[in-house]
Amino acid sequence: MWRVICGDNRQIRILYATLNGLLLVTILASISLNHYHSQQEMEQTARTEAKTLVERDLLFHRWFSDSGGLYAPVSADIPANRHLTQVPDRDLIKPDGTLLTLVDGTYLLQLVNNRNSGNSLPLTRMISRQPLYPGNNPDVWESAALRLAEQQGKEVSEFTTINGRPYLRLLHPLRTEASCLKCHAAQGHRLGDDPSGGLAMALPMGELQALHDTTMRFFYLNHLLLYLLGVVLLFWGQCFVARRIRERDLAQAALEASEANFRTVANFAYAWEYWVGPDGQMKYVSPSVRELTGYEPERFLADPDFIKTIIVDKDQELFRDHVALEQLEHADCSGDFRIRTATGEILWLHHVCRPVYGRDGDFLGRRASNFDISVERTALLRNEELIAKLREALDKVKTLSGFLPICASCKKIRDDQGYWNQIESYISSHSEAVFSHGICPDCAHRLYPEFYPPGNKDGEDSGPGKPAEK
Image (cartoon, rainbow, N blue to C red; front, side):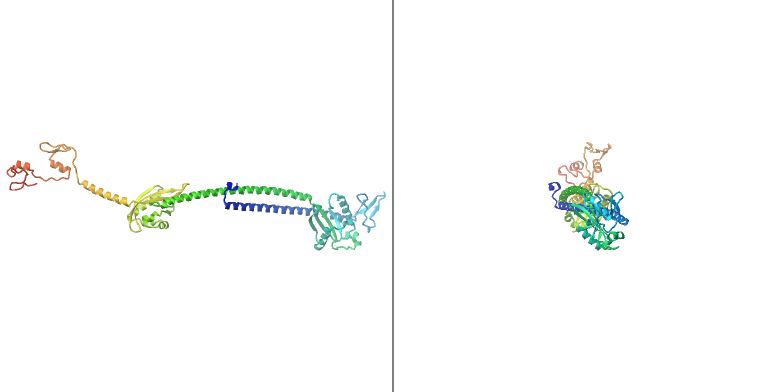
């Protein structure tokens, strides 16, 4: 399915797997980072809340200690204080007979914790290695925390689980103050002693943990959607890139086939083919130039002006005019000129060129073809010479044609103007003939019988001499 949709390009699949792995690592890193910050924020909030409660209870404790405590009626909720035996006025009786008991700061926290014991662990309580109240003995964690607090001189806190529920446990160490000696002097405590007790806090983390879990579920969902979106985009991108690569490969194959066809035609062309770019540089010269001129194609590619050096001097101006015309007008041009080959032979070439344009209409230069027309040109020159000679001969020959009006008696000929001319005069004026006069045998017998007797059939002279010729 994957290969059908997106093709079977191994590099693209590797790239997709790599990007997908990077996306997954990024999403997991983002989740971990958000989880860490959320956890840190939850813990910081819990510590802040715990410290606030500790400060509040310490204020109550100090106030009760400094004021010497308060008296409260003894009841089921407030039993008589049985532990301050060193205080003489621990219990009082009102005039109406109501029994009052002294409530100090430590006893107040114990009463509050007792009322809260049905809900969770005591929020705060006083602990000591020598407690006045039996319920203030430290547990295992508090004992360890108390020792650590004595060493470090600062409060100790820890996030833990109690009965399957999350809690923040905190111990704030307390030094012996003046108000403490009223109750603890009998135990040997002195003002400013190192802490042997403190205020312990166990803060439930259920609500904060629930808020943290809700926030993280929101983060998980958002990152899951982000990852799915990234996977879809990567898949679409892979298909798009694969399709473009496939199209490029097809186009490249078609271009290579077209180029192969072009080179097959051009390389095996009979004529000398070449392509000049817009900058005047040779982009292609067919191998046939070697057979035609005796020079290698690389010679023309390296030096675009080399073609000018092999044109004979008499045709240099003709070639320059042709090049100037090419540069001025992007049109088809042609012309004939002569070149001198590597062996010194003179060849006539018929040059044909035309402009080349790209698909977007950009001018790409000119394509030219040079054909060897030496044989044709030689034959043409010979024909022209023969025609010239024939015309010269014909110019010397005049012919008579048509009907000539001639007198039946004197043999004069009438010209176009109506005049009668001697036959020799008319022929001389209408041809290149030159007349010489003589006497035919019949006329000689008739006019000069004494010299040409009638018996002489052949018209030869029988007299003392031949008739004179004019």
